[in-house]
Length: 298
Image (cartoon, rainbow, N blue to C red; front, side):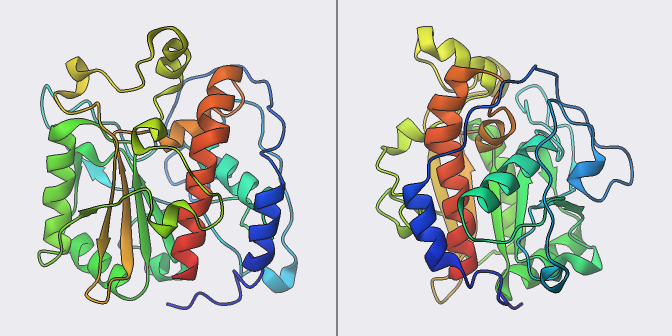
C-alpha cells in the first residue's frame, strides 16, 4: 500500500499546526445520533446533527491523492447487561466531516471532503491507508474480515480504534483482535511516545486526555467526572488507556483509545462552548491530527 504524494506537504503542516489555533467555535443546536441511510457510502449522504460542515473542492489532478476519513461498517452483537456498547455509526457524519475539515484547514494536507463508509471485505479497502472503528465493545469479526484485516494491516494499513469503555468492552475487543493477530499483544503507550508530539506537542497527562460524551463533559464543570458510568458499562471505566499493536519490526498498525471518546470531541465541537474549548480544542483535535500524521509518515 503506497502512501503516495498525499503527505508531501507535512513539513509545512508542522509549521502551520504549530502556529494556527483551532478555528473559531461555531454555535450549534443539538440533535441526537442516527444511522446513515442504508447503502450510504460517504459521510455527506448521512443526516447531520448540526449545521453543515463547510465543503471544499479538490483539484482534479489530486482527486486520488487525498487523505480520506474511512469509517468501518462492522457487525455488533448483544453482549448482555454490561455491554453498553454502541454501533459502527456512532458520531457520524459530524465527527468524520469535522475532523476532515480541521485537518485540511490547519495543515497543508489535501483531504477528501466527503469521508467514506466501507466494510472490511470491500475491494477498495486497500485504497485507504487509514481506517477508523468506533465503539467496538460489541464488535465481532467474520472469518473473512479477520483474514483481510490482518492482510491490510501487515501491508501498511493503519487502524484507529476509539470510544469504548470498561473492562467488558475491552475484553471483547481484545478477543477479536487476537483472532487477527494471535502473535501480537497490545502494549500501553506512554505520553512520551512520538505519536503524542509529532504535530501538536501534547503535554497533558494521560488521565487529563479523557474525553467524555458531551453531556457528561458539560456536567464535569461541576462534578469533575469525565468517565462513563459503571452502571451502564460495568467496572473499569475510570482510567484512560492508549495502546498500540505493532508488527515484528515495531511499526504501529493499530492505535487504541480506551475509556475516552474522541469522536464526541470531533462531532460536538461547537454545540457547547465549554465542551468545545476544554475537550475538542485541547484534546480531541490535537490527538486526532497527530494520529493521522503519525500513521501516514511511519
